[in-house]
Length: 188
Image (cartoon, rainbow, N blue to C red; front, side, top):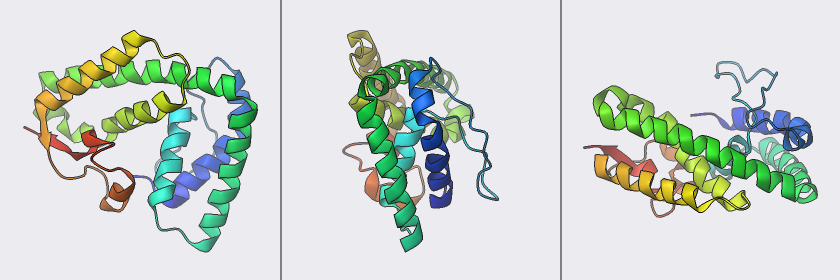
């Protein structure tokens, strides 16, 4: 899982591109910046990526300098979100649709071969977390997409059992089982 420095760097890079990104037709926008040493490269700029990084930063223990950076970047994101609210909501809707398809594809592969795909679950479940976050930001998500997500959650419940938190323990406080039950599953 990404470190606080990774999330801060991602957000600081993303905020400089955010207005252009919101006004583009792209859902996934390539970031041309280096991640902290020893960490994987930054994922594409997406609203889901921004929301997930912000959420992780609310849970992590940060230094005073990191708290200051978080505060500054959060303010800039909030200003852009307010100024471009319609574009933000429309982008969240499009990303919701895209991530829903990716989540559905993973669950189909998982159902066909649980043992062969279980090691992918901690990464892939981030899509489901982003779907929850994007749902709260999006405008006019079609009912068919909402129903598909409900159906996919039922499928997941059918192939998994409640278990331990699948990400690093330090994040569990921000991702409760009541809000994010799929982060507390294990294979049957």
